[in-house]
Each structure stands twice: as structure tokens, then as C-alpha cells.
Image (cartoon, rainbow, N blue to C red; front, side):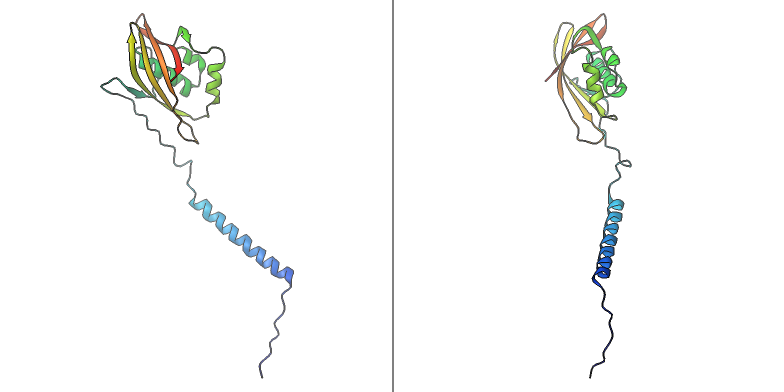
Length: 173
């Protein structure tokens, strides 16, 4: 009445091999898709918004090398030495001799703890003046290569002596 066909039976071990091969092929396909669609972190550098500027109210923003011609310039110089040169010795060149800043290896230890490639942007706002001493509200935004920006706030005091301005104290705000 009906035709009979000889259909060979597939052994369980052979069937398992086929299932394993199919699963492996599916995983390989997913890996290829993930690799092709993943963002390329090397091709897209982290945005670094720090254009140097000074507002009419005296707020200074920047990340340049600075100098000792003014309070903001000395603060920029200290931070440039800290973040760009990664040198406590260079940063100390912006401190007055009797500066209230921790001594020893503390400064270099802080620099060494920063990930390589950390960039910075400094915002300096004038607070008050007492003779040759100025008080500044400072925010140093750190842009770490693989993390969110970190923005510690400080109160920095500068002193002008013989036409040059130096940092005399740095404190957390």
C-alpha cells in the first residue's frame, strides 16, 4: 500500500556533533557582528572642551603653561607642570618658599597616581584681595583617558613679591 523507504538512523553522538557545530557557528557569527559594530575607542578620542578664555568678571579658563605674571598665570603654570610635565619639581617652581603645601614625595605621588594621558582644564575665579595676597576659587577638571571627568575644587592663595606672583597655599574647597 505505501512505499517503504530505508531511512538510516542517525546515532546520538553524530547528532550531538551536528548540534555542537551549529552552536559554535552561531557563536562565531555573533562574535563577528559584535566586533564590527563595537565603537572604536582609538578612532574616537575623548572630547576635551578647554579653550583658554577670560571673562569680563575675571574668570580665567585654560590649560596652558602659565607663568608668574599673575595669580591665574601661576595657577595655570602649576597645573601644567602637574598634568602635562607630570613633574613635582616643575610644579614647585610656582610655589613661594613658605607655601602651605605638603612637602616631600606627596606631590609626585599624586602625579604618579594619575593615569597616563590625563588631560586637565582649570577654571579660576577671583574671590578676594588682601594687599599683595589674592584668594581664588579653582576647579581643575581632570579628563582621564577611560573614565568620567573628575572636578575637584580648591581655594588657592597667591602672593605677589617683587613683581612676580607665586602660589602660597592650596586647600580643598
